[in-house]
Image 1 (cartoon, helix red, strand yellow):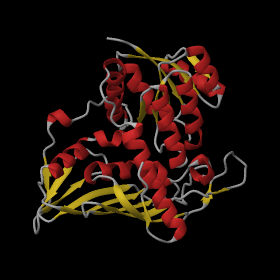
Image 2: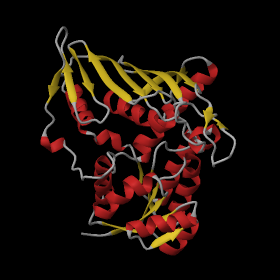
Image 3: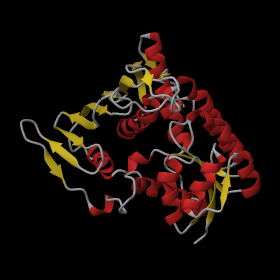
Image 4: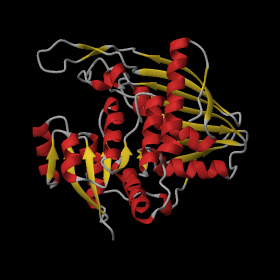
Amino acid sequence: MQRVRVAIFGTGFGRAVQAPAFLRHPGFELAAIAGGDAAKTRRVADELGVKGAYGDWRELLERERPELVSIVTPVYLHHEMMLGALAAGAHVHCEKPTAFDRQQAREMRDAASAAGKLAGINHEFRFLPARVLAREWLSAGRIGRPYRAEILGRYPIWHASAPRAMNWLSEADKGGGIWGALGSHHTDCLRTMFGEPLAATGSLRVEQPVRAPRAAGGAPGLATADDAVTVHYEFANGVTALVDLHASAPYRWERFEVHGDEGSLRWDEHGERLWHVLPGKEPAEIEIPASLQLAKREGDLPLVAPFTVMVERLHRAITAGEPLEPSFAADAVPVQCALDAARESSARGAKVAVEKA
């Protein structure tokens, strides 16, 4: 099997979720990691058994010459890092949300095309078994004509009882906010079921602005990035969708529902269980075929399993020329356009059309 040298930019999610998947795949060699804190990056690399550790991603590119770079950093760094990696001759896989806005996303897409390199986006939630089976049921018309979808999420990320320390995720000018962090996944979920949204009506809010100090003894931080969102999408096939997320709740809870004129589908937050609901009947759990189940290892974070699917797709695309899905052109830019429309709607107080990618 052809081995591909990969580098990861980022020592948080990149270390916890992406590194295990790359290290276990026989077709990848995790050659190096880059992070903003050189000492921390060295510790992470040593823990993983990775030789290369850099406090400067540019130095990594110059010295290591990786064939693939996976960007797992704060959003405001994605654009510069991706352009730099492409210029160094690497394929790129980028964490979502894609970029600060659709202009940056388009520039990143166009740079990859001009360089003749693959560009992927990490919408790994689409590989969760319940979502895959739900798409199959919808395609087969198993609940009739769909007309309504709802994604509801409550998360204790910034609840006042234990607020997370102030960081980039609470700063709007760095691409933070729950809409980018999770709204990107939910938007991708909806568009894979119903096509590209035509319009968005959004309300993005900061409901719990106080954050814990960045460092012990420091002053509390004030968030500028959204921690609560309510967005309505409209689709060409007549479906309307609600995405309502609240990241300052005292508990975690999610529900995903799609309603059709012959029944409904509902799946759980882990994407492992799916229910069929007929009018006047109790929900009936649908057995998920073994072929859709994801391989899991004890001790792994839940997202390692779906990301492992992404890693296999990256390898086949690089070594065998298979189409990459999800990709920058087909997925990252359209999602960014939809996210931007919701933000602009919130700012204007009016419905906004979603631009074509």
